[in-house]
Each structure stands twice: as C-alpha cells, then as structure tokens.
Image 1: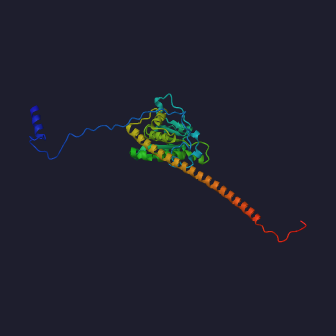
Image 2 (image 1 turned 60 degrees about the horizontal axis):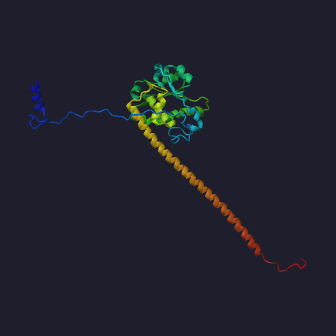
Image 3 (image 1 turned 135 degrees about the vertical axis):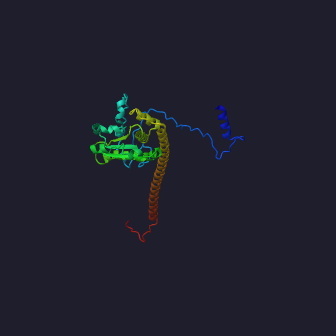
Length: 314
C-alpha cells in the first residue's frame, strides 16, 4: 500500500520526472488565521472628578448629538450618576438597570413586566436589532408601548458598519426625547429604555456610545461604567472593535470642535479690541473737535473789530 501510494504521489507531483503535466496550478492554500483585535481594558470612571454636563463641558457642536437648546431644558442634575450594583444576581439579567436617571438598559424580556416599566416612568422603548430579526417581526416594543401608552421605536442594522454609522443619529434621538419633556411644560423627566434580545449586545453598544459622548468618557471608562450596573453585558471582539472605531471618530470631532471654539474666542477678542480702539479714537476725535472749537472761539474773540467811537463817559 505504501509503494502504491508513493507511485501515485510521484505521478501527480509537479517535478521534472512527473508522469503528467497539470493543466492548472494548484496549491495547498494558505492557512486562515483568526483576526486579532486590540484588547480593551476597563478603566474606572471617576465620579468625583466628573464635570457637570453643561453646554460648556459638552465637547461637540450643538446640533450634532444634542438638539439646539438642549442644555437650556436639561440641566446637570439630570445626569446625576446612580450608584453601581454591588450585589449582582443571575435573575437580574432579565431586568433593566438604570445607567442615568433617564436612561435604562435591559433585555427584550423585561418588557413583560409592564408594572415595573410604569413604576420607573419609562416613556420611550427603543429596540436595537439585526435586520434579520426585523424581517421575522421579532424584538419589538410595540405591544408594550401600546399597553402603556408610551412611545416606541426600532433601529434595524445589517452589520456593524451600518450600526456605527447611525450611532450619532440615535444619540441625538434619545436627547431629543429627553428634552421634549421640559419643552412641553412637563414636570417629569422623560425616560428611555434601550433593549435588544439579551440587553448585552447592540443595545449595550448604543448605551456605551451615549455615555462616551454625553459624559465625555473614554471607551474603557464607559465599559466599566455600564458593566458596574449591568454585570452581564457581553462585548465580543467585533463589538469592541466597533466601539474603538467610534472612539476614534469622537476624538477627531473633539479636536475639530476645540479648534473651532478657540478660533471663535480669538475672533471675539480681536473684535472686542477693535471696538475698544474705535471707541477710544472716537473719544479722542471728540476731544480734538472741542479743542479746535475752543481755539477757534478764542481766535474769533481776538479778532473782534473795534467800534469807530468810544463813549467818553465810560
């Protein structure tokens, strides 16, 4: 058997002594290697060093991630950071956790507990789902929203590239809903629940991206922030890579906005100096006019003609 095998190998080989010449080139192929993604290390979010969320500390142009006038309607207290969950139980994965006073993250199954949704004051259910689930009419908050008479929406994406492209739009949509509670004269803050099938995948990506923008947090800080409140989030390599790409986009946007604000501040200073100089020159011109008028008056007094006769009695 060994000899037969050897003869066959020789006949099919591509050497000079081969019995047959191949009609096509062939090879054993290249070994497929698993793509190595950079590891994202968690970093503690320092609550004490955290700056209040205001128009001044917001690192992006107004209108991009927040609607115009957002910070006039939503104050820093709305971004009060809730304490982390110190005791996590397995059953808590089926519940929604508060990331901010108005932002919750949970699985699709938590919508079944409509009493708790009403108790928490949820006003908007936002589903983040793969388009394949959308075609099967799965992962929707429509029934729960109808029962509670609240708003609902769905975000369908085909792949990670499509998801990262719509993240800014979704963040702005969340902020528009939150701001609408005060713009309409309401006294209760609108609250948004983000969910996907497990509450640990795409909806968690949106929550992390939101915190990176609004709390000006780095990716490691936002990851730690969310995992400290929803311990079961699962960021696989592809989702971590997506968030790393989003962080690069945010850093570039911060640099552009920082340069724009510096340019505006410089132009404002130049305009202020110019106005001051114009005012000073105007005052000097007025003083010159007054001086010239006084001098002209004195000269006119000196040139006053004498009368032809003088009263002797005087």
